[in-house]
Image 1 (spheres, helix red, strand yellow):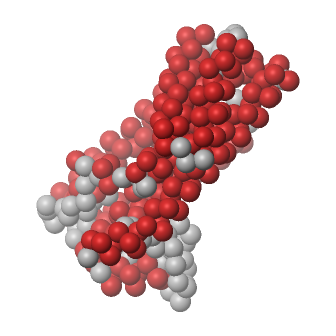
Image 2 (spheres, helix red, strand yellow):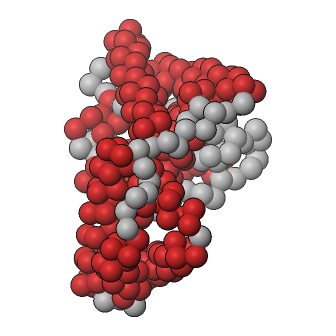
Length: 323
């Protein structure tokens, strides 16, 4: 049985390795283009390196970052370690430099994104998959709620909302905005954009509270994975879309960025949504299939994951399978 599963998963593993190689190929190309721009356009060097001597950096960065990424794209595994390690080291260095000098803030942001991409692509190439199940620990591990008493569930739900919204919609955005200001990357949004951000934040927060109450009222659970619903919830906002709380969270994050005038917070919300959809959602849907079986499969056929479904006759073929 295990041998059969291994044979079945080989094409998926090769495809994931290919995706990792393609990322490193794009990174090598982007690095080469950036170094060309640095040599030909003074503004590029100022925005991404500040007062750092480009020649001094190029002497080390071109072999380790550009050539290293190119060799990783050619499936040299040792080059994956070199390119990824160097990218993470440079990202940390640029964060320290930009924070200390207020220069090269754009370079710090670009290297943070490159480090994240290199880490994910590197794991794909070395392991053949992203072991995202290791993230599902503690309060994020899938377990049914220990109580079905509605008043307690609503109290637990309220506490979870306050904690998670406080961390992900207040504390983290404030920290990101502080770095944005320090790195001289702040952009003043027009007042109309700020108003739109406030309206979106209010609307998405209502959807989030509605979704959380639906889980407590109809599923005897809470939004926290460690206190999941005992019954499949297909009422309230879940009658229209399978992940209303996730959608509300993404919109809340983007709206918070618009409200406080931080484009980096908007980027943070978008990247967070992509990572959740790619790394966490497959495990969540696998758990729902294991617990509710055909009931969830039928629900997933009727209701889409991200786009609202207003007709029960429509199908939703975007259920993610997990190895």
